[in-house]
Length: 273
Image (cartoon, rainbow, N blue to C red; front, top):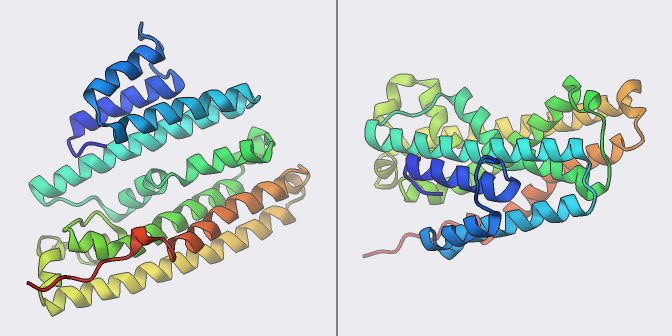
């Protein structure tokens, strides 16, 4: 998505219109919109539009329940809106040096990482359709949030060295020092931390440790919430609940296993001039 908020908003609207026909007031067909997109965007930017539309149609054709379709569309909408908000924050950081609050960042990052969308898709993958009263139960909602945070924070922690080297500071590890000491916001200089500023290195090191502690706590919450859900007579009365709980917990476990092996998170060593 573009680093310009206006362009990002335009891409968001186009994505929802093409993939789920969210902008149904449009008189243009999906093929017409895709054709226009090819003239405006690069092939890598068009690919999510095309594949997203194909995936959406495949799921509907395969019999995705109407209620599940509605929840999937809502989750996809929230996902792309979170991406736009992230672009806006990056612009504020670049122009004004203003970072979002830690609670705001965590709330948006929880959605932007894509885990809530995967959680809805897990029902489709399992071939089940849970009733809405169980999905809205506080224990189930808490487990969804814990899994999503776990995925997001693992991503942030392991991405941090590479992002710091690139000067990108919209990351849990960078925002923790600001949250703990708001007066330090203007002094948070990623470049200085890389160029021998021991104070900066110490601050980021402590923040990384704190981020790991937060992630470990979220892992424990996932385990505890899963157990409480299965011990609930109301929730466990649905025969599909155990498979659902296992599936969404495996999102956190699978992301962790993949992340520690993936080249995406390997920070290349600095080259000497």
